[in-house]
Length: 379
Ligand code: NAD
Ligand code: DAU
Image (tube, rainbow, N blue to C red; front, top):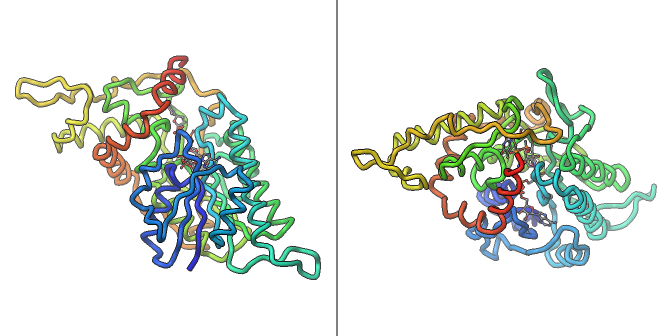
């Protein structure tokens, strides 16, 4: 049986990953470590925490004593590091927090792994590691910087991060590789493109647009909406990480992406059209709308759900133009391919939000309203 430490799994991708591996592997034990920042929500994983196969510890990846204690108590085989400050806009407002969590937090985990997993030295003075262990760093395509209209990121594209967030993630990647080169720690890194799907915090584009439509609010599109992202359904990302962690190939970096490039304006328009279509097909969904004007037949009207909701607002500082992943390596070496076409994934995602408004209310009770007003009033 393998014991996993999964950090940041009260957040979007980590939570989806824990659900994925618990369903896929019977013989595993998962310890979730999460600081429950504004982005973490225990409700997201409450049904997974059975205290037999899945346990929760609230704590900070920067806390040395806590991580040492957890290693002693649970004897981890795998560390999967999702924990991070993840939102580019917030990194522009408060870079230091990103450096602390994303760089020093990662380095703290690496050091704890070194203290716990080294069992001696080899004849050349290199540490000898416990067998069957792995440190996996969940990274991002943003470490490669920004593309023009042509080309793709491959694993050999030089790192060229441009935001405080991506600079912190690139630094973490370099520290991870440094621990492999210097101490021979068995590591892997995945660099994924933009994820979407259930449990996505509504500060990010797709869930924010869904939430605003349902509340009858304007839909803020930065600049002219021509920036391009490469969208991947979150479960496909989880599957990729699972394949990498179980691949027994140490020291490898894999790009993970869906060959699904869209401009932000396309994403917003598809989201508007899909919400409207789902409400036309199933009038029950209209009950979640905050704007509830009725027509003469007594039906909640939805004709206002159209592109007029779009509002072009001030651009993000240093806004990366385009991200696009070449996933050839993971496809050819591990057999991974994205399984969820965008047309299917976006419908599943929107239906999930329509059916889980309690979750949206739960994660937006705290500071969300202040954040939204501060972040968008100046745009
Ligand atoms: P998220 O913001 O939804 O979740 C982050 C989680 O980390 C939260 O639960 C939060 O409470 C926790 N956390 C933050 N600081 C912590 C700390 N100091 N100690 C312990 N826990 C802490 O993020 P996400 O979108 O799920 O992203 C997860 C990882 O995947 C991140 O490392 C991110 O860089 C990477 N990634 C995200 C995307 C994407 O599209 N969202 C794409 C590629 C890579
Ligand atoms: O590429 C992977 C990255 O994708 C991850 O590493 C990050 O953690 C994740 O947050 C995401 O970063 P982006 O900045 O691409 O995601 P976001 O959802 O914030 O924005 C997507 C695009 O939409 C981006 O070009 C900015 C634009 N945007 C975003 C928001 C929140 C808008 O036009 N309006 C908005 O209100």
